Length: 222
Length: 136
Image 1 (cartoon, rainbow over the protein chains, first blue to last red):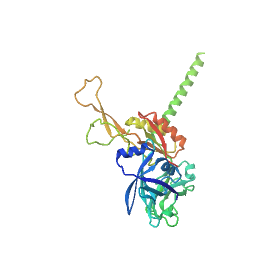
Image 2: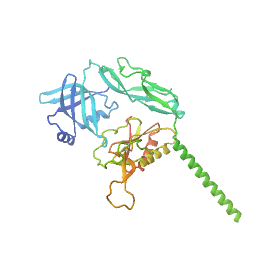
Image 3: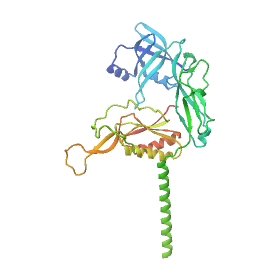
Image 4: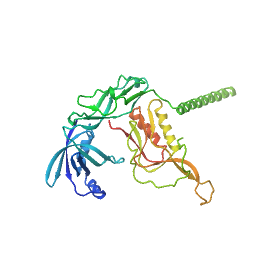
């Protein structure tokens, strides 16, 4: 799993006004907490956070959080627990950092990536992803960026379940094995569309028939 | 067209729309979506017109999800009626839209086809929209 270093500064001021001031100064308000840690309010540099999140692993990254305070700098291991994003501007508004211990199991949502084009898709089917993430429990150093599953063998009517994923050693799923990840559905054409197509074809035929009759009448007049 | 099966009250207050969509603002089902950028109302007719625009362009293949439902009745007074004498009778059903709301989602088609389908669908709607896709 990807690792990165992020510098954070302890902040005293809180509330809407203070958060807005931080965002104006290219910073993001954040909070750091853990099972045995008191929560601390932080501010992190926006470009630095955006750079980390832009990487392939996205939010799935183990951070070495360098917390700067009046008493000095200390480094803590953390993951990004929550991220508030502005839906229109696609900017980060707030981040939650959760302290982890490298010798204690954590629960994490790992993305599922479906690789290759299934046989069923070439036959006209639709690959429908039901679940795009899998909740797993493992030690932080065992975590992987994503589960990559080859779906090239899937045909129309086939489905892929959690139990079909071969989990690496040390990682166990917290979800039940019978749950579906993806299905290859048969192509569906809505009744309305078919009716419309038939109507359109009917109109074209009628128009063509009219043209022929007009031409025939012109010829007879000549 | 979409409309509620039954309602507790026939008429509803007009209301004002402010803020952004807090829920329904991310892609949940498909790979591509059409996202609202403005506040407004989408009538059942407009929702249906945009859906037809997408399905006509996509033709076969692909699955579409409609993420909005018109659950608000909007009344209208008859023509050549003087003002007053109470609220007009229900005329149509609308969905209240806030910026950021994902209106439709699509899966099982190429990105270029989805973008074109949603461009066509966007022209049927009374609000500004944009094409969004899931991060690879």
